[in-house]
Length: 206
Image 1: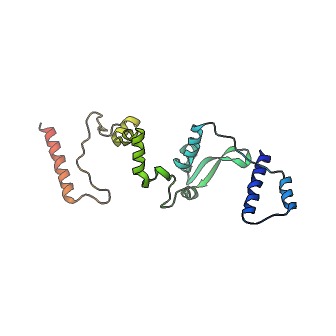
Image 2 (image 1 turned 180 degrees about the vertical axis):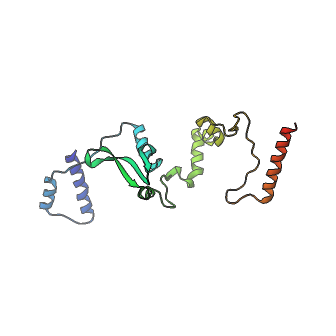
Image 3 (image 1 turned 120 degrees about the vertical axis):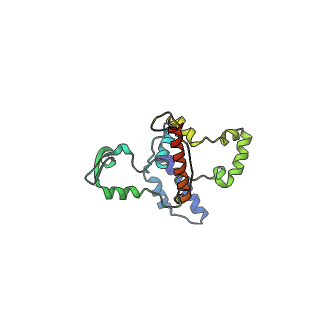
């Protein structure tokens, strides 16, 4: 592999020099060919699943997983790490809580940066073109189906959002929705109190 890589690299290097009207002496050229080139190549992935798992570590996981944290006590955090300088042995490191948080915050992306960006036909500017392509492929109908978050919670987590957390039989009833940026107006709070009073009276005097 090193011989093939050396010849391919030198071929491209000489073509670049010729394109820029530059040249190297025969002695330097022969010296480069006589050198033993060392090529480092990682073993290939075992399949698509390993590729997705490898990329997922950088796109969908945090800086450190919960299972690596051994203990948190006395304002110190202990966690496991792999020491590649010592034969990839697993060791335990203890840091001050403030130092641990400092290192953790170094992995938080600045505003405006994204871990995943979509280009080409997946970019937002080409959404119309993508919908046309999906329609031609017969997948537009399936792609347009969007499930409610309550349905997803029930299917994936087996958790019924509308079920009463106390009696596990009754159903939760939404009385009011308001923006999270500010508290509800005073008249809304009074109206909620009135409705609660009416509900309690209807229960006891039914």
